[in-house]
Amino acid sequence: MPLKNSINMGNINQLELQNLREIIGDHQTMVTKFDFYSNQCQDPQLKQLFKQSSQDAQMTVTNLINSLK
Image 1 (cartoon, helix red, strand yellow):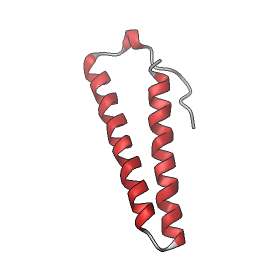
Image 2 (cartoon, rainbow, N blue to C red):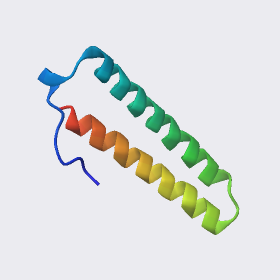
Image 3 (cartoon, helix red, strand yellow):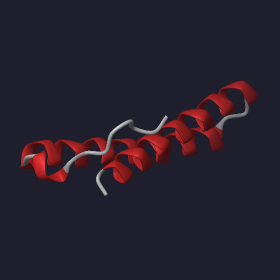
Image 4 (cartoon, rainbow, N blue to C red):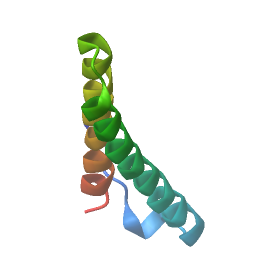
């Protein structure tokens, strides 16, 4: 789900920007880990759960980065 409003960079302070960077980095780590877990799973339902979680985390990363433009 895309963010409804973009982030106005003129109204964001350094601490908020650093927090956004950390959130984006954390979600990128989640993408990597969920992909790894998905590739290791034998159970199809668990494999799909990890794959969907990876896609959701990637969507969050994309939405946050796009909102900063």
